[in-house]
Image (cartoon, rainbow over all chains, first blue to last red; front, side, top):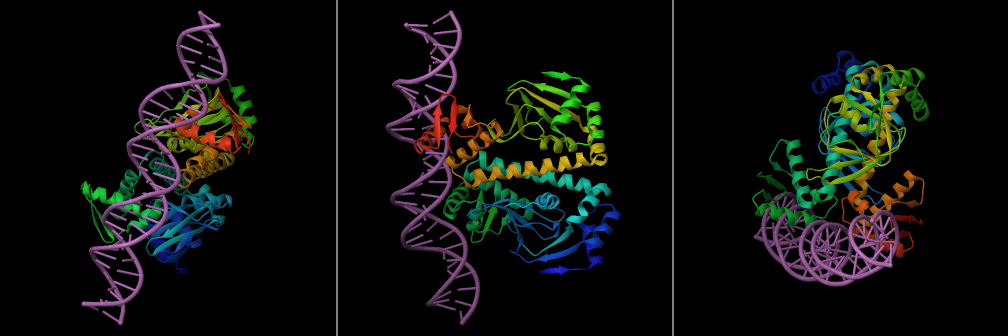
Length: 217
Length: 217
DNA sequence: GCAGGTTTGTGACAAATGTTACACAGCGGG
DNA sequence: CCCGCTGTGTAACATTTGTCACAAACCTGC
């Protein structure tokens, strides 16, 4: 954990995952931003927190949750290298807060871009401007898919949707997940998830093991 | 229905509902955009449609729905004068499509801003750039509230939330709604809505009449 | 290999929501 | 005034999801 200043490292990481950025922009970012390391399971953001900077993920993975007053959480989407948290941009630019939380699912490096820089970047660097718009667009689309899944789908379809998503993110048909984790992410209960997964296994859609779910479809 | 060209009218409407725009921007928009009229209940957007322009609402009201493959629809939020459809901006700028539909709830006038103009507006007019970002931000927040309501809340709480929203939008405690309309918007069934509204009436939260629900809380 | 924790399986039941079926009330047009 | 339409009320039942209780399977450290 902690903040590390290492300009050359920043430059390399940016070139690797944000290749679309113009060279000037990369230098600019390398000059003014810092990398912050997070351990697995560490929170990057807490509900109600104000932002002093927006975050670009350069390594690892981050899960974004919506939280309600009682502390229930609902998994929305996941970010990887090359992604940015739209919320941190939005809130950062307006100095507002939001009821979301972000958790590293593995050791993660994020680039902290100070809010103060945002206006200059938006107006001065076309690739940054496109990046921000594209970030908004894709997060918005993801959020719409989330709405779909809870508004129209039943629990078993939602589990299927969830598993497919996890497979896409991990590039692996074998997922290291407990039923409890899934239930928590979907704001349901472990028993329900177990029951439905068992039915999916009987239908030949998955194979279940301790801590692993293998997708067969 | 139909497209009306009336530069002076456009200018006036813009000044009225988009007072924050700089004068240059208003002239620019008045010069290059057209007003389009929609009747009550007319669709402004169909699922899967491509956008050639983004829309600013200058008069009336528009409900935004998410649709699934089977044609079920789920009400997300509502736009009034001074609002813009974030989706039409996002999709417009990227020439992508989306499974949403928009319906006028009353006679509505919208300003059509051609996509071709977007880049020029974003880079050339600061008030436009802020407007777009603010539009994204507030739609995103609204969408998060929608997620809340279906992820965490039970049906009766959702109805309460829905009624409160309608009151805010209509500035009126007496809502002209049928139970069927509410049920459709929430992707539920009329009987369920009737049942729960009746309970709310017994608890003194609302008064029910034919085609009207009076909010008492 | 055994103790103790974690993960999964499962039955019984509760609660919420969806479905079916039907009665009736209000309202407008002829 | 009566017919027919739309909207509402409600009972009975099905289905889905959540909760409780408990057992078994599995894993790890000793």
